[in-house]
Amino acid sequence: MNLQTERMENHKARLTVEIEPALFESAKRKAARKISRQVTIRGFRKGKAPYSRVAQTVGEATIIEEAVDDLTQDIYRQALENSKVEPYGPGDLEDVKLDPPTFIYTLPMKPVVDLNSYQDVRVDYEAPTIDESDVDARLRQYQLQFMKVLDDEVETAQLGHRVTIDVDSAFLDGEEPEDEDSAVDEDAEPADTDEAAVAPAAPKKGEVFVSEKDTPVILDPNEDPFMDGFVENLLDSQQGDDVVFELTIPDDDADPTIAGRLVEFVVTIKRIEAIDIPELDDDFLIEVNKIRPEDASSLATLREALREELDREARQRSENEYAEQVMTKIVEGADIHYPEVALEYQINRQLSEFKGRIEQQGLSFDDFMRFTGNNEAELRERFRDEAMTRVEHSLAMSKLREELGTDVEDEDIEVRLEAFAAPFASENTDNDQNQVMRNYIRDQVDMSHLSAKLVALGRGEDMSAAVEAKRAEAAADLQRALQERERNRASLDAEQADAEDLESGAAAGAVEASES
View 1: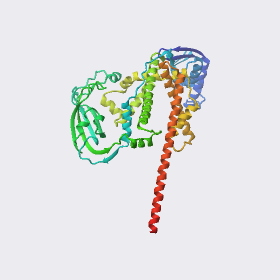
View 2: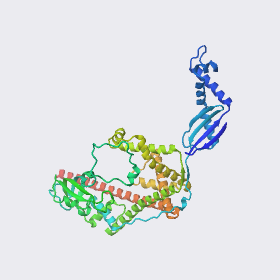
View 3: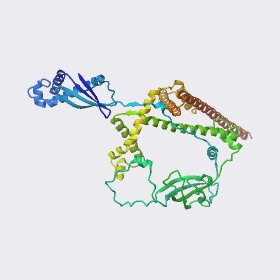
């Protein structure tokens, strides 16, 4: 076997394999015998016709084709072993030459990633801050959780009531919508989805701002659900009323396409309720302590505990986003080469996800394509840039894992597994299911540790210390989960004891009644 290996620009390899003529001739003879057993050749029993008569009956090309089919897998396997090329996927037989017998294969090569000086990547980091308004909002969630309905047939809506409403709204200003009968420019270039994502079009006049059904709203002007002034317009309304009013979106709205726009609301009042929202007092503290893992001795200590929780949550979100920023910068500085088939595979995944979202909305993909005037080739092309980003990010992430190594230990898995199982009364004894859970947790821990390393890398800090900090957080999470389990058990025991006392009291009362 004479092998030549050529690496091509599109991250493919071409293997040109010249074999001994005798080997090819032997394969042809074998192919002729096989064909003679399948084809009726006049004057000869099945499998007994000589080569010349088989060739005369079916043609030399048919024999050669059969011989190539018999040889190609073994030749390709040997060529791969000798070439040392690492394939990304199956190869293709590109061509066969007869003189001398030569097989030419092309195959996608395994992606190659060089992260270059990723250790030097630095990204500015700004730690999140929690202020008193955040704590107030979390306390308000608890207050609403313990809210009681005093009267669900109130006639007129006033401050402090809760109303259930249907809301429809639309923009009153802006560009006029296009006429539905206007002609479509068939030669127009399709809109670029990436540009559209960066600079979304402003809603046209008449387009929906918000539309919701059966939405509960507490009539508190400090908690306007959509924009300032919404609650005020609902005051003095009655059940069944359709309240129509206009509001202007603030000029400093986060979405510049709607800032300063005029919106008309049509609100249907479906129910008005008088409610009791508990005050922030000792009775409220008792109720909150029943559902939290740790007792707070006062409202001040409760606020401090909530502040710590909010800080943990905000820091986790912030660090996850920061890790993504660091990873993006690593990808930008890396040299990444991969075959087209990797990109096509990712586009196929995105197309499949897109089809699923369309079908979840009750519309077939074919109908969607027909309504929008698109075709699948155009759609695939629009997915290409995002697919390239995903492929490169995934490949760089895999290479970074390889560079940094894994440090997931059995104890890491046990801590997370115990924390996960803590809320449940019984332990899982299904070994297969338990192993699936362990594998899942291992992946989660690995991702958590990698994220911590990325955060440390971007800040120029010690990555090992960052992983140890993650382990400390996991241990603290376990302790909170165990405390919550014990509290839940104590609560269940108390409820069961109360039920038994009631049952005993009822039984004793029945005995006394019978005796009297």
